[in-house]
Length: 95
Picture 1 (tube, one colour):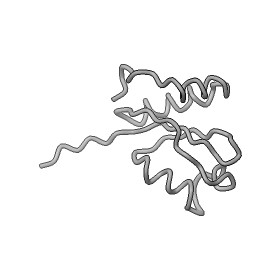
Picture 2 (cartoon, rainbow, N blue to C red):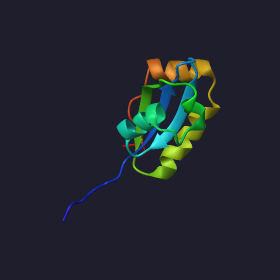
Picture 3 (cartoon, helix red, strand yellow):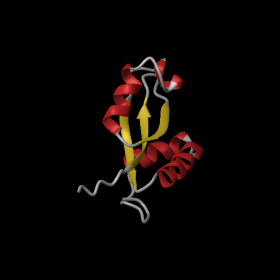
Picture 4 (tube, rainbow, N blue to C red):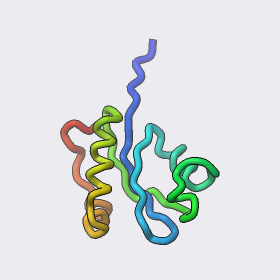
């Protein structure tokens, strides 16, 4: 029997128009590919391709990832840039 733990990620993308997009996922590689190639999902990034993953944090559950997503979305652009350039050490409650 496998003991599989599903991890959640909060991530920031840098879009082609130099804006940031913040979201959550369980699979960063797949999600970035969807942002760049899928005609579905993330209406915001669909018209701002290509996008580049510039930041991510790992969490043990969706709730914690969603809370962090909300926190990041409330930040100014300057704070987001600082977070990207100087990522914190792994936080308590995160993975």
